[in-house]
Image: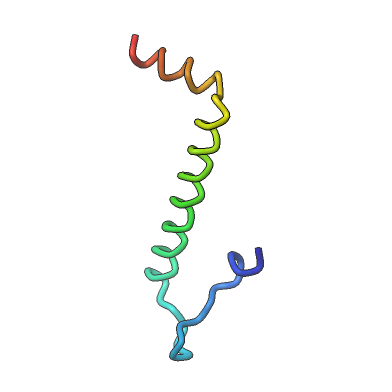
Length: 57
């Protein structure tokens, strides 16, 4: 988890810009959320089905 909390520097020794850090964090967050969503769907979460049915009706 230390990799996530400590910003890493580029290979040139220059610190990353704030925008680049934010883009990398957002990409990591999206990947984590996608994995969580896949896990929930694979587990057959009953509440998820009820929410989706409620939206459809």
